Image (cartoon, rainbow, N blue to C red; front, side, top):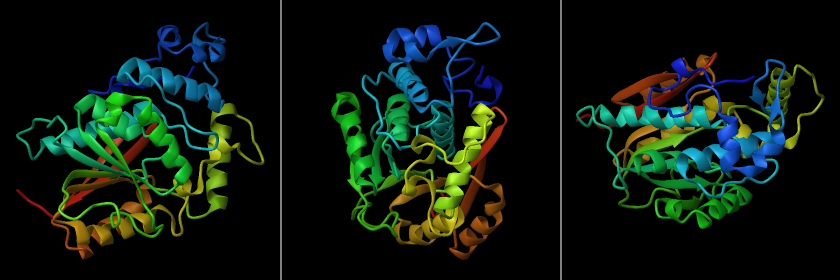
Length: 303
């Protein structure tokens, strides 16, 4: 049975230990059909089944974050909620460093989620746990429509989350951050493959890891949408572009941050920061089970 490695999750992450599927079924009935008893006598679900994972996510969001409705269209990525929550909690730590070691809470803290996706997961968690207000930018109309539907069916989220469409594929902050607007944080889970072919191979690898079986083509839910998974030049080019563009908005954002999937990209990313004259940066590592992830943060302000 797949389980969360509780010692390695952020201490404030509420998704510690095994999933309590008996309790989760009580709050989300559609999860019931996917629960079975495995060879060890434990309740589990098939984590290679996108519908099962989607039902699990809906149950987790309803149980822990009071989200009454959550769904995504076929073909969009279904995020692992514990790992997404970790990014939010480490961002809370980042803000606390310039706030007397206290995590600032409430709607006066404004966060920009670049590429919020159909699932809207970061704004959901961040607004629910810390009360932060969010702007979610998105370039894909179908993803934007899905995120809007989630807001429409969850009035409490609608009060704290705003959606904005990015009209230009080559831009990140421009066209989203408005004149006179200030964000305490920006965050991003960038597309990390450099081509559709590489993204498909990554999806096939994911299926192999989950099922032990090789497939010639991964299903849509493992493939995700193009903008979610790949961009020309891959993750490195995307983040370098983000760093360059951040210069234009350095007075309107305190901390710029982004996930970095590939550790081998870090030296070039840090070099790009130095060339941009960034005054302070951090690399923050996160661990979920055997997987190590990280994000980089930079600021043009020192106080």
